[in-house]
Length: 513
Image (cartoon, rainbow, N blue to C red; front, side):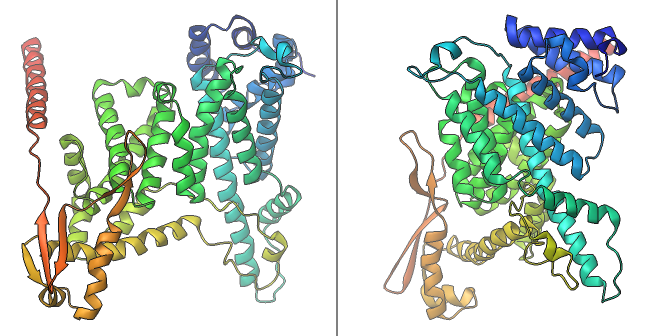
């Protein structure tokens, strides 16, 4: 075991102080300063591209506290994997690091009143600020996502080499063979059922009446993480269901958690054809971010370099949504950004070309295939990459485009119906290049496609994404366009904001003079 005398005093002081505030003093402001500020400063000074000391090397600074050492191991692993690309062994090591941390967290969790050890565990013995709790869970899922993608890529690389070998008995590249061997020997690493088990256990222990603040934070933020995981797996209904019990006050206080929640909820609502809800969620967070970018508030938050990327993705999703759901209400400033950024794609869609796919591929998350493949199959001559090698996101894109193909026909129907108060079914069918018997089912289909669930105060209720109402009688389609409510307040608010911008520019000119 190496002595901690080999390390600078500032490193030892940081570890000692972080342990003290996490296990004894429980002062939130002090821990926040250490976690957000001091760790970043010490890292930049001593370990910008290298690993921090191992837990064994600094154990004397925390009295060998197993739980704190696991927290320290996760924190420093997170830093190392951000500056160096992990190999298969690093990824498996990361899995064991998280398993050890969660096992220790769960073993120290307060028990329900009346339990055998309830009194013993009633006293609070750990405090983590919400930002730290979310970073642990966010990185846990990020590494799961990365491992699934690595597993798929490695399998495909081995299968491709085997299928291209043509009986020449060439050896598979050593790095691929080594990765396949390590993956085959650790088939339970990053298993999706175990990942879900830990997240649901954290929710369970943190939802009890006896739970401490830290475990309540972990429970609420685990729900955000579960929602993200279900979205990545393509179970959008489960992703939305996980949000119903989240505490908005805490989530809104940790902006990266709020952003993750809004983005993955928006994607899930889109894929469930709940277009108004998707616009509401994504439009709200984009408006908040737009103001935060202007004031510089968001730049002060660690990880802010990723915010612009997610903002652009959400704007692309809004471009899709506002085009297929014209009744959705979007703030004028965000609608203007949507038009400016994606005018080209929207014009493609209007002209009948495929613009939806480009927008969705850019905006969608990196979906994962959580199934463990038969690695031995990849090494056999003539191995096929399909079906395991199919990119998970391509499957989701295919599902999305099937829906948009129907919308293309429906959009054309709507454009003709909006020109009339009544029109013959035969005439409308001819406009759409269909026979009457082919066209009549589309009239019913249109009603069905735009019918959707909408969130309300009393729970979800059925609504419609249509801005026109129509019915068929005596071979005539009768059309009644929805009344458009004029929103004067948005005009005046926008003009007030413009005047404020002009006044600030005038003040700058005065100072320059």
